Image 1 (cartoon, one colour):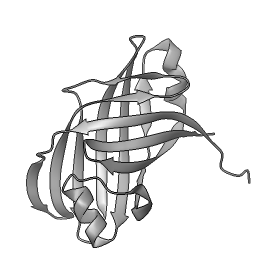
Image 2 (cartoon, helix red, strand yellow):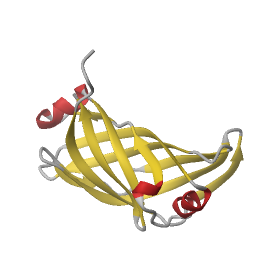
Image 3 (cartoon, helix red, strand yellow):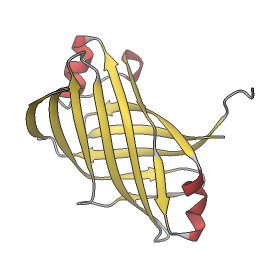
Image 4 (cartoon, rainbow, N blue to C red):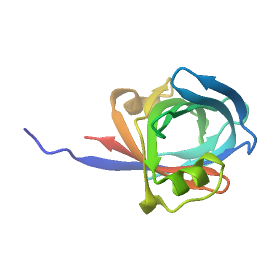
Length: 154
């Protein structure tokens, strides 16, 4: 088997509404919906902004204290291309660190596990290569929202 290789795609900074919609207790745990209000992304082959009003994170804090994400983003490249990005994710760490993360406070990335699995859709010819790849991302929680480094799996 070939070893797993990756290539850096971009860094993504998200800004979120500090007051998520608390849905409450659901079968898996505590459900909330966080509106993503904007952000930016930049890498060697693409850069642009997160389009306000077209994004959210559906979050469950599971009974085992693992944070489970389902996120949908609309990205616009600096040259006018549109990219739909969706990803599930998982986060976990000590009770103290996860309390920081779950209440919207910054936490040091080395203190917890935060990973995502992005997929992309675009009709922009310049970015059609995104439609054909699997990506992974490592994340951290900053005060304004989560940040990720996203990599293509080669």
